[in-house]
Length: 130
Image (cartoon, rainbow, N blue to C red):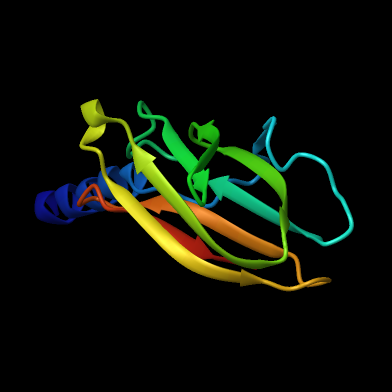
């Protein structure tokens, strides 16, 4: 019985540490890519909630332009010109300087959504989502 209770406690503790998709993320604004124009595509990037990495901000970049620093459960909506771009994220040096990037091709009338998640191994990923 004690072993079962310890196993359940361990599972609950570990699952509380993983990130989870944000339910009602707080919106962040950017001075770049903030206005919808002809030839732009809506791109939303949302950082997961949860404890893992929550003390560290994650810098979001489009090509070589920093557009936001997202904290846990924050989101940014951007209007990026159609074509090929690199979306990248990076934690600060105090949080390991972890990076991830994806190559995207944006097409008119095809909005995109991405999420930033972390796992127990301190891996931070930028992933497409619905």
